[in-house]
Length: 75
Image 1 (cartoon, rainbow, N blue to C red):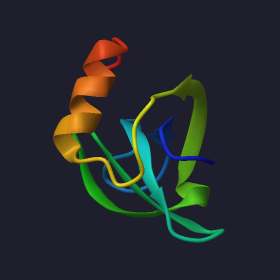
Image 2 (image 1 turned 135 degrees about the vertical axis):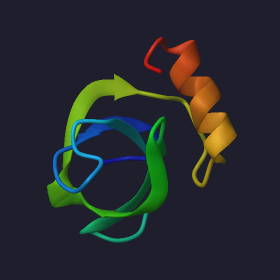
Image 3 (image 1 turned 180 degrees about the horizontal axis):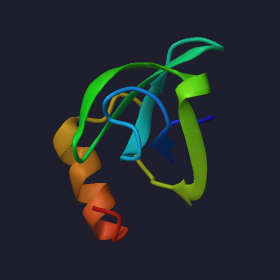
Image 4 (image 1 turned 135 degrees about the horizontal axis):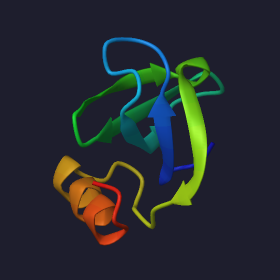
């Protein structure tokens, strides 16, 4: 999983919502954010990757991610 990969959360109270990986912490955890998803650390086992990838920088702000999602038609 790489920075910019769009995923669907499959666990937790945000399950079913789209999120974007903004930083990879280690082999198990990443930082995600997205429309309706609070920026937080997330276990990779709780994410289902999609075939979509956004062109964002590592550690992109919530506003940058929101703009990228809207530009891709995913918001």
